[in-house]
Each structure stands twice: as structure tokens, then as C-alpha cells.
Image (cartoon, rainbow, N blue to C red; front, side, top):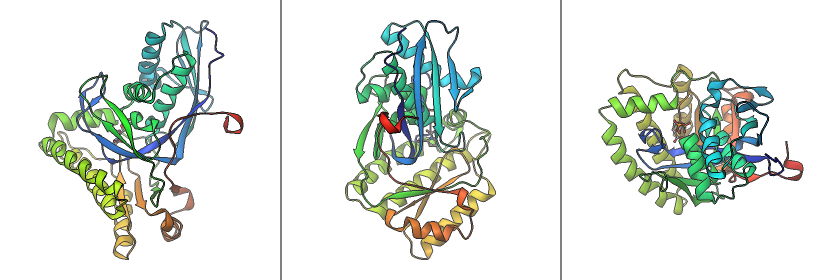
Length: 331
Ligand code: 2P0
């Protein structure tokens, strides 16, 4: 196939303030609850796709290195959907440049699969709406559905392929930011997919999670509309802790924490006790993300430098939605 349509697409990662943690339908990637995230500017993926007649199989290059079959699993779901919609048989070459430490619990799948949905659909000549892009990205990785948008986005769980997608909530163009505290950049033992499966099947608290998450969502949306930073932080921290409590209550129990994660959470609490409005959240990995006011970010960063090396700390601001790259942005 002609590859003239191929363009580089950039998508930024997002961190959930109300977590997605469980699927109602694994194949269609329908979640058990709505989730809400903030897209950030610090980590992103640039991707280009070519559909080529001469290829014998799909290929994925990350930072110039050909990846094994296993790494293609999620990408293939998106490629197959695009091929089906566009009536293409050709295999694809995906080139990605990842500006995210892979599998450090920093949600590389969100930016990676969102960028792929954008790049693959463009390469196939499909002109998808943002809702269609969110649905397509969702099929690769649930959290990717939210990375179509900048700022705060909510993934509405829906009940089928057509009505499960994210919508923008607020551009977050105000005083909020995040500092990533990277305590460990090693690959996680239990994938999100496996972790979610285990808690849905076995945690006796799962029903409580679903109910309380609906309440948290209602409340955080009011807090976002009011730009009530403290309430947003409190709800986000609580949602994260409830998600991790599900993991501790699963059979067999598991957790994503390292001793250094707990030290980092304590550090955030100490900062809070000393008067800074700061909160933490954690995902499917040991790293801790500190939610703070952008106006205090540099001051807090300096304080964290007493306990962490500068390469363990990444400052992030609200980021934009998915974009097609042009000019000097091209990789
Ligand atoms: C989230 N996480 O809302 C939650 C919180 C991690 C913890 O979505 O199985 O890569 O591909 O849908 O999206 C990370 O899991 O999982 C995630 P799949 P995904 O951000």
C-alpha cells in the first residue's frame, strides 16, 4: 500500500486520579468503573506506521530496536481493527520513540497505544473522530482511551464497544502539577491486566470499590470545576489507596510497593504536615507521584532533592491531547 499518508503522531501519558482497576469485558476492554485522569507533558510517545505489501508480519520498533512477538500483542489488536475498518490486508511497520521509562509504572502503554491508534488510522487513510480514536486506543490498553485528550479526561465505562470512551473534562490550565518520584525503574512482576483480573475475581472488597468510586467521581468533578486543589488531592490519594487495598485483599494477595514506595509516601505526608498541600498517587508499579500546585513545584522539588537524586525526580505539568507532528517537532 502507498505510505504517503504516514505521519508521526504524539500522545502524552496520563495518570489516573480516579483509577481504572478491573474489566467487565476483557476482549472489548470494558471497565468496571469510570476513571478520570490528568494528561501530563513530561512523558510521551511518538509513533509512525507504514502498511507495506512486502512485509510478512507486523513489526514494532521501539527506539530503533525490533521488539519480540510478545510486545506486539496489544498493538496487533489496534492494527487488526484498523485493517478491518480500512479494508487493508498489508502488515504494518510501527516505529515508536518512547519518552517514557518503559514499564516503570509510568503508564507507557497509555501514551504508546494512543499514539498507535492515531498513527495507524492515519496511515490507513481513516479519518476518525476523537471519540472513535478513544475507542480504538481503548482496545489496545484501557488507559490509552484517556490520552486522546489533554488536561483532565474521564473514561466513561459504557457497556459495549460503542459507548466506552473518554471525554475531556477540563483543560487543567491552572495551578496543578505533579512530581514523579522514581524509586525503582524495573519491570513490574504482575501486569495490570493480570492484577485487575485477580482483584475482580477474588477481592471481597470489589463491590465496595465500584460503589465508592462512583461517589469519588462525582465529587472530584465538582472539585475540578471549582479548582478545589485540596479536595482533588484528597480524593485522588484515597482512590489510589483503595485500588492498592484491592490488591492486598486478592487471592493470592499481591502489591506493587517496594520499601522505597512507603518511604516516599511518608515523605509526602511529612511535607503535608509541614504545610504544603501535597498528595500522592500510585499505579501498577513502585513509583510515587506527588500531586502539587504548579506554583510550589520548584520549591517542593528542592526539598525532595534532600532525599532523592535529581534523576529520580521528574516535574510534570498538564499536557496536551494527541497531535500530528510537523516541522521542528518531527523526531
Ligand atoms: C489507570 N492503570 O487508571 C490504572 C491505575 C494502572 C493503575 O490503567 O489491561 O495498561 O491494558 O487495560 O491501561 C494501567 O493499565 O491496562 C492502568 P490494560 P493498562 O491508569
